Length: 67
Image (cartoon, rainbow, N blue to C red; front, side):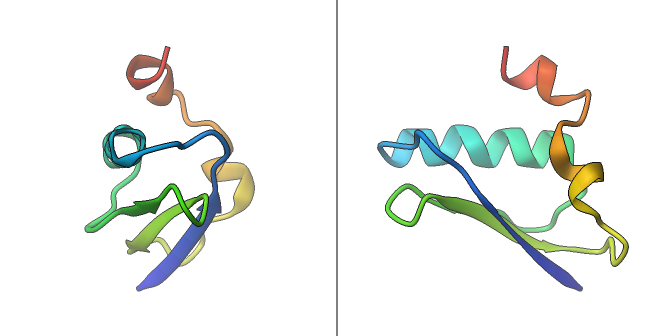
């Protein structure tokens, strides 16, 4: 397993964390996602050992989740 942490700007509360978690679950094959508005990051373990920043930058499915 590989754990990826991504910095996210603009999260202000627990509901923001939930929205980010839903977007990540919809876009990537992850088992567990956690976000922290205090730390300004989200992430979790996934099975893709070859994940690159370019492949995680902006997947097409995010457009359906976050307009």
